[in-house]
Image (cartoon, rainbow, N blue to C red; front, side):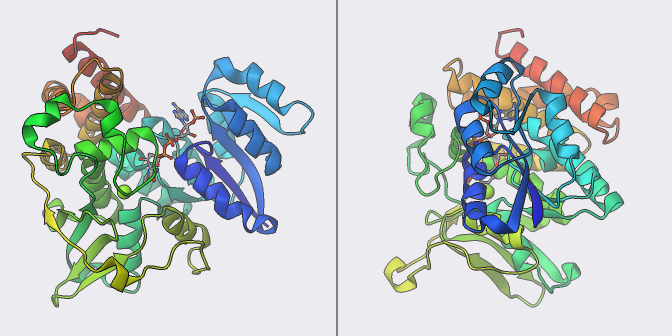
Length: 389
Ligand code: NDP
Ligand code: MG
């Protein structure tokens, strides 16, 4: 039996992961499941899967979790240190699907104990790509991409020589506002931004798709994960979300990965790697689909893409600053304290302020340094938004 843990089990990726595990229940022993506010779902799943431990990130919910698990034999725990302790429990495969920079430390600890890490938490790569890769190297642990674009690139590269790669193209649906006139974007509401044309995902990543901050994070993730030069990575808008990424080789070939907008493909690929096993995803009827279309990913419409290029150019801990500023700006947009277009402005101003601190940005990739950069960026973004934390 494979021992598995799911961090962020109560979320969209976590639930899709458990759906696959449920279909082949006998093959797995569940070590840890984690969540934050959704105690009911966390307890229900921990009991169903007979987990060793259920962890909520919120220490104030420990009593509720204990109550919900009473008599089940599942341990209850809470808080950041409990998440890390859960990540240190021996497991063969760990899903990293907490949302935001909070996913970094558990993922790192899972790699330190040598588990294969299925990485949905793209923020880990954006904030601390070199630290993640170095930790995996040191323990010979595997990192398997779960972000659909990166799973697609990973699959297109199987058996290929990285030196023969000329470019990588990741696709973007364009999100909720791809067809809106530019002048209207300033008035866009969180509800409008949180409806995705093709994918069913968590609220935060769905809004990030509308602003293209999601694709901006993915550009950086591509650079860090595959070690590909920023100038070789392109973004193209593909409204149908059927082609997830393409890899271009020096002989002119473009290898595209095509599949339905169902995260269970990428999750299942990472779960069964290196084997391919049958997965419950729709088989595409190409004739019915008729056509795939492509458009330019305009940096005027989506300034987040320009900012990602600047971050990749700057290097060091700029990625952690970028992500933290984005998280705060997104919080403020969700709370209606700033408008849709203000998110990119706040992130850009935070980058300008914090990047001036050379000693912080180039302090080196340790968890503490990443946390310091993240912390300073949050304070700075809050100041810029006029609401000191
Ligand atoms: P959701 O918002 O649906 O789920 C987030 C999970 O993280 C939940 O389990 C939530 O708990 C938990 N959580 C929230 N805040 C914290 C915290 N501070 N500390 C610990 N745990 C916390 O997100 P998604 O599943 O959509 O996304 C998860 C990750 O996967 C993100 O990094 C996202 O970018 C990435 N991803 C998602 C895709 C998708 O299709 N959804 C596609 C590609 C990547 P609770 O719900 O109990 O509060
Ligand atoms: Mg993606």
